Image 1 (cartoon, rainbow, N blue to C red):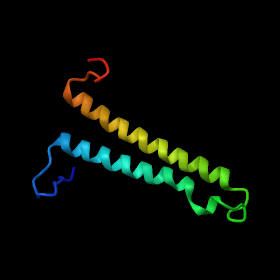
Image 2 (spheres, helix red, strand yellow):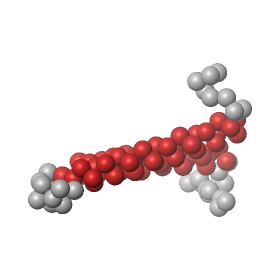
Image 3 (tube, helix red, strand yellow):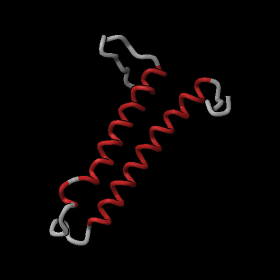
Image 4 (cartoon, rainbow, N blue to C red):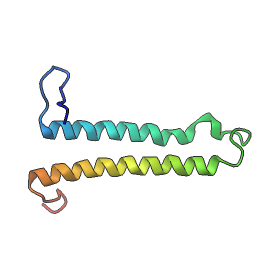
Length: 88
């Protein structure tokens, strides 16, 4: 695994690296979700008959990113004590 460095050049801990990835995935997921508001969806002239398919795939990509973020959270959970914060 490549090492991650913080803005100060300090090597990040495993937990910090996972938290950083989760934050980036969250930002990326919001950008993907925001694609639904793109101007191409304002007119049926652009990509005729494909808007439904396009939006469905945008949402599928968004859900996959959310799933990836959750799974990295599960990595942190297992590295901690294996108990969900909801069960504590």
